[in-house]
Length: 225
Length: 225
Image (cartoon, rainbow over all chains, first blue to last red; front, side, top):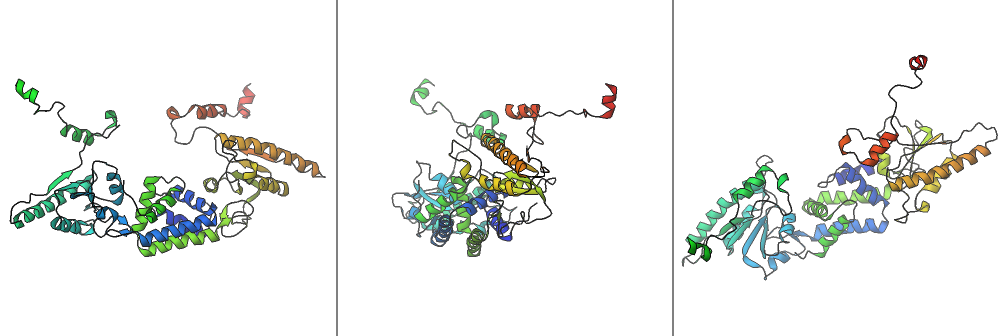
């Protein structure tokens, strides 16, 4: 093997510390930058520095913006009674592609994982519950990943939200306030997926969630009964 | 879609400009950095800057080092008569894992590609030919990628090296100097590969390069003829 200069080793190490960047990719990025013009390097350095100091997590939802509360939280066109809870900012970006959803968001910053030592205090759960208690949310959509950590978090959050929901109901003197609806994303076959290659869990969930193709409350059908 | 702050958009764009980094990965890296502590960011910035200004291409072989000539070119333990020509610094790193090879290197900086407008002038070919003319190389190993660009470059280099080799021979008054041997890496089945999944070209090359398992000049065999 070739002994590399320490500066280069450090550069490769820095890129390897980035998520999903392995040794090969780290080399490609490093050599790409070394080959770049001085202007490019100056731009890279300036952009990282500026973004780091300007873009901070929103004090309400936890998404990243250069203003706080962020653009999403300030957007009065959004349905203020619908809250979508996601694990990461990337998941928020994914959900934002769903055109039918025009509510607000809450970024947890991860999912509960007893194995990795991630407890409720490590996530933005307290802030979520406080938001629910102070806000006027009709529905909370738990858009967490369909894995063990996501499931654990969903179960924990459902309990906590039900507790708050009841407390809110008791407090409301006129009794007008209804409980907060807690929903989750449907589980089943992904679009374009091939049945043949689906794992058992996906198929089981798709089966459990199967839908009737003929509406059961359709007038024509009931009249025939 | 969510309108992101310009600073964040610029950060995502910078990472997308890196090789093999797509939109998803760019997001992961950006959010990872935004979430990092200030120490980490300072280290990232300092490491990129230092490496960029300290690590430069070696004036002889074109590999990256903080001294020029580089550590490899200065290594007197290496076989000074054996030169391995590679396309990129990454390929040099790969070749350096071959324990049996202890020669010098020459990084071309790419391969000839008429389609992408990469001609001989865009690569470090002139420097290679000058090195061969001035050095005392016995063998040049063309370790280029087994693709169309690599093949084109091999053909071009073989012509150029033969021309220089002859010129050197004519110049040498005592006639001691022999021509420069030009070799390439063997082509065939990759280690651990499954025959079933090999493409036609690989199989064809493996067939053309097949080797006799019983040495043809083995004394026992010849005596039996």
